[in-house]
Image (tube, rainbow, N blue to C red; front, side, top):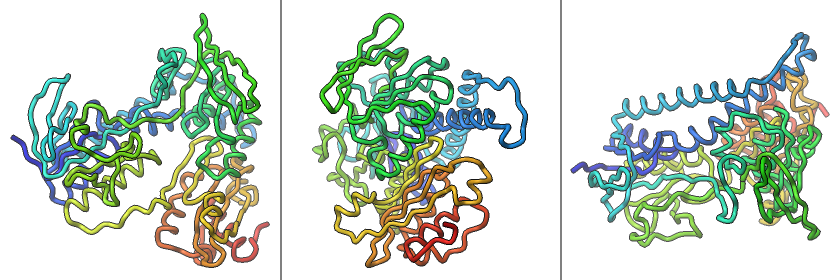
Amino acid sequence: MKNYDLLIIGGGPGGYVAAIKGAQLGLSVGLIEMDKVGGACLHKGCIPTKALIQSTHLYELFKRSKEFGIATEGVRVDFRAFHKRKRTVVTKLFGGIKHLLKKNNVDLFDGTGQISSPGKVLLKVNDIVIEEILAKNIVVSTGSSPMVFKNLPHDKKSVLTSDDILEMEEIPSSLLIIGGGSVGIEFAYVFNVLGSEVTVVEVMDEILPTNDKDIGNALRKSLSKRGIRFLTHTELNQIEKIEDAVETTVMKNDGNAEVLQSEKVLLAMGRKPETEDLGLETLNLEYSGRFIDVDENMQTNQQGIYAIGDVTGPPMLAHLASAQGLLVSHNIAGVDYPPINSNTIPKVTYTNPQVASVGMTQEEAELKGHDVKIGSFPFMANAKTRITGEGEEGFIKIITDASSSEILGVHLIGHEVGELIGGMSLAMNIEATTLEVSANIFPHPTLSEVFSEAFYMIEGKAIHI
């Protein structure tokens, strides 16, 4: 019977990272994965979506090539080729992860894991127990899946989830998206550029409802100019398939109903944790709703049983799952590792323009009683923005505490701002002050110069505005 220091159930970005780091720290490690290592992020989410977005963005640039002095004719989209490239990207990364697990001597098991008792896991294939595995420490890292309410006709052809639409190789004439979070908005961007008539329904008063409202408002206005229709403060009532179309009834905030007809409907209403058939019901674990409760070390209320990633609740982010996996592996190995600061977790929405943020929104900072001071700077006054010809409508918004000079939140909308936000996460983690960031030397010409300018606005006045 195999016996491990660390056994992980689920090989997504939390699980496989925890496995590799645990092995590097000298632990004996086993990893159980029911499908493919890399998880939903690599195979059904982050990576394939961004591959399609990259091709979409390039198509956008081709259509504007005359602005850059390049003459092109007959530019067209081969959407099947988009998907072929997507699969190539995923396959290469998948192979890389498998190689790293083997290189670091992680034992990989194909199947599902069911915890029979603390320290014991049943390995199953097609619901048949193959063997029992012992482990001093068990990590649940089984991720999440798209949420679909039972009364909706989810047929995977006309009514789709994000999993389904990633396999759809035809561009629909019209697409209705239920949900204005990052997932829904990214697909809205892609299919709008590719020629679909796109409508987004969002129950809250603004799209990207967990972001700063100024940013969500700016993105909605930008995408509206391109032809995307947004219905905020609007609830889904029912969906009905009719011949070659789908009729969706929504209820507006004023109580009036509207019937929307589209070729396809995308359900982007969030994700649910995958915790069934893991044996958790026998362990008396504590939950917050459907999510597993953990302490600051990601340990459940049962000694030696940990949970990381989406099963522990929002924000459901691949990079957070990886960070939690690193924390767990270090703690189990007895190696000091800094705790995760929930206020410095960055997030990005990969539209064009992109949205990136870290820390509190203005509303959150005010509710917590901070003496809020705002600094803002437009990208149109940045030289690199003018050079790229993209994101000129964007801006950076800095939220600080006036009395302490603490950076509370940083929010950006503009070209490739996802590549910038990590630096602000680091600045907040090391508790840099507004003066320290404004005095830092940023290379010219780069988009990063907006940081010094926005922080100059906090300290006094920006140079280039």
